Length: 119
Image 1 (cartoon, rainbow, N blue to C red):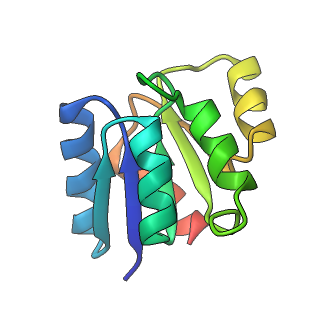
Image 2 (image 1 turned 45 degrees about the vertical axis):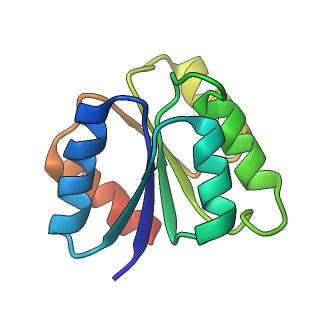
């Protein structure tokens, strides 16, 4: 069982992803924006982070960069889960330190596969 941090500013997305994560038998921690997500990542040291990109305060690219470059969180894989579906978005996300990219909308199977591959 892994501890997975889900960072998304949409309450419905948070609930949907949380439901899938818990159905897979993992613990789920949630944050509603990038800044809160970075702080929770440092405090909780989850096994995996599922990160939205378009969020207030600190967007997902900025939060991924902060997490992937901080000494205590750089080992945590970050998967970007976003509506941004352009190839340039994917390339930029990976340059910020993301280890995967999943475009919304996604199926439960697709998310399960991404989680299994990252853990």
